[in-house]
Structure formats: C-alpha cells, structure tokens
Length: 307
Image (cartoon, rainbow, N blue to C red; front, side, top):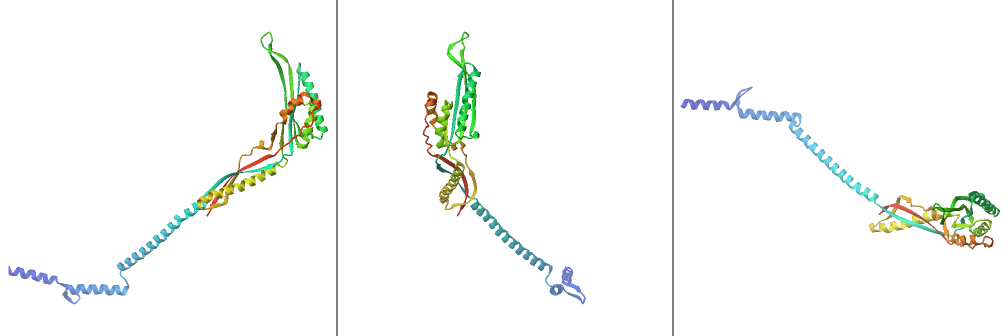
C-alpha cells in the first residue's frame, strides 16, 4: 500500500518536469520561458496577428460608421428635396373675361326678291329680271361685286289647301321663286340708302341688317389682354390664402371664341318687310343706329405660387 502511494507521488513529480535543452526543468519554468519567447518574438515583429486583426476590425467599424453617417446625411437631403420641389410645383389657376365696347362702323344687309306665277318658268323669268335690276342698282351705288353674294335660291309650288281637287288633294295654284342676296362690308352711313334703292329696284323681302366693326380683330386682342390682367388679379387674391402671390405663368389658354359675336343684329329687317312689300316707290332712307358692339375674350391661366 505504501509502495503504491510512493509510485503515484513519483509520477506526479515527474509530471511537473519537462525536457529542455539543459535537461529536466520544472514545467512552470518551461511555460514561462515559452511565454517570454512569444512576447519577445512578437516584440521583434510588431503587433501580433490577433492584435492587427483587432485594429483592422476597429478601423472597418469606424469606416462603416462614417459611411452610415454620410448615408444618413444624404437621406436627409433627399428627403428635404421633394419638399422644395413640391413647394415649387404648387400652382394657382384663374379664369377671366376681358370686354371691350366698340361702336360698329360696318353693316351687312340680307334681302330677297320673291316672284309668283302660274308657271314656274314665268315666275323664274320675272325673278331673274328683278334680281338683275337690284344688282345693277347696287353696283351703280358703288357696291363692289365681291360684296354681293347670292346666298339663297328656291322654286316652290304653291297650293290652295282650302279648295281640294277631285282626288281630295290641295289644288296647285302656281309657283314661287325666291332669290336671296347678301350685301356685306358696307358703311353704316350708306346702309340706309342701299336698302331704299334696292327696294325700289325690286327687293320685296328684307331679312336682316347686322352690324360689325372693321377693327374687330384688333379690339378682340385688347379684350384678350384685359382678360389676362384680370386673371392675374384673381390669382393673386386666391394665392393670398396660402400667404403667397401669383408667380410665373405655367400655362395659358384661350377660351371659346363666339364668332357670331362679330355681328350685332338689328330689327330693321322685320320692320322693313312690310314697307318694302307695300310701297316700293315711296321708300325713304331708313335712319340706322348701330349702338355699341360688345367684344369679349376669355382666358384660363395657371401660375406658380411665389412665397
């Protein structure tokens, strides 16, 4: 039993020794020498691989941190940019009408020659003769041929619906021939005389007299300019609700232009119908008063909001 204990102690004692170049030395001394050797070697070669890796990792972390900071800064700038773009893209729109009043100086007269006959050719012949007389009279007064237009021509059978024939159909009584003439681009001062002389020459149906002005296009442009000015004033009022004003024009468009507004109708035609048919030889020059012509233009404008 004592021998076994001794043997174990001897083994443990030997375990504490290691073989070195000088012989057996204690294991603790050998470990210390190894550590000193490692330290000495690392001291000669600089930092150990482990330490270099640690520094590299630290440097990479710093780079990543700087990169993240730059990325955050770019994100903030990118986030701010749309706000500025949105601010610039905000607009205000307004629609306005400009009006210019002008005294007409030109007249357009529409009248006709109506003839009747039992036979169509007889009524047509009479109608042609009278129309030629009217045109001759107009030219004799200085009206240019380009200002005289045949705007309508018709031949219509006439029936007596009160007296039916053997087949109980309206009885044919004859034919009516109608020729309509339009005389344009005449001074209002001359329109009354043109009417009177034309009736004497054969006109027996005055349809209308309308007025216009020779400077209509010029006045329409003035109306457009006024409309644009009014549109900006309206847009400024609307923009004030946002603490802004109407800035640069983004878009502008012209509204519908009513071409019929070029002409102002007169009731002289209706009044002249009865007179023309009743007494062609005693017609006096009618006094024509044109009044004023309303010329209007509409625009729609969109502006940037200016802060």
